[in-house]
Length: 294
Image (cartoon, rainbow, N blue to C red; front, side, top):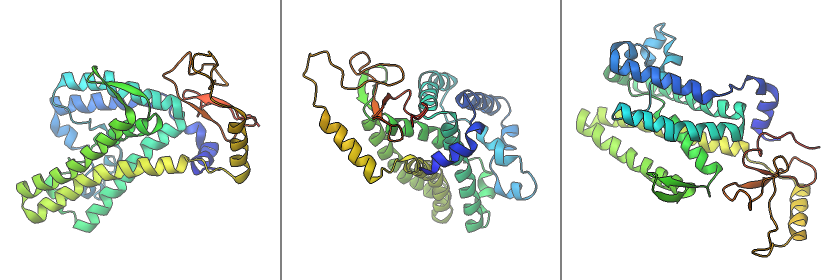
């Protein structure tokens, strides 16, 4: 049994439904404070020094720092046309518990990394930055990366014009993050000098690396490990069916829940469930949410 399956069996009832909406509300609140009263927002940042001096609310309140945007218009566009549709779709696919666990693990690992950096540097960075560098920007970006890993062949319209598959968007984003790492170190050294610049670069790179590593860990934890019997069963099943002839009108894939096929809904992806008896196949909307047939 997969690790996350065990967690879901024990704690599945604690998954937060419609978590995406709560996250967006927190972003709106943080963005409003950023415009109207930045001093209040600074009291909510992830400042390890002040946390150790009793301001423990910062362990939670730092998450309202919204992803960076250049204007209010771009913030609204990002929420309506990018963040909400992708997050809501991923939550429907994975289920509330898995999506909640994914976001929570990204937050927890970021907090742990902040404490590790604090003790390694003796709290020097907090004196310069007051924890303002920590935000959920890259945790939000990891939702997009997770979506691309879940639906690598799904086609989207880049800038509402250019058709591109999610797997190419994933590769582009990973390359861009690598470029960001180099750029951050360069800017840090130019702004603060070599010693402090490297520390600032490490801080920002931790924010990039931790959510990405959390994403790969999460997918590894969800990965199905088939037994020898299950692999044999899959091989025998595939040998029984050949590719249908083009234009024959015969569907190769059909969801056992909703009945949709690749002919009626070519945008869907289909997968077999190794836990269900009878080689049952499901579409992307029901793969993680159906009841297993024993």
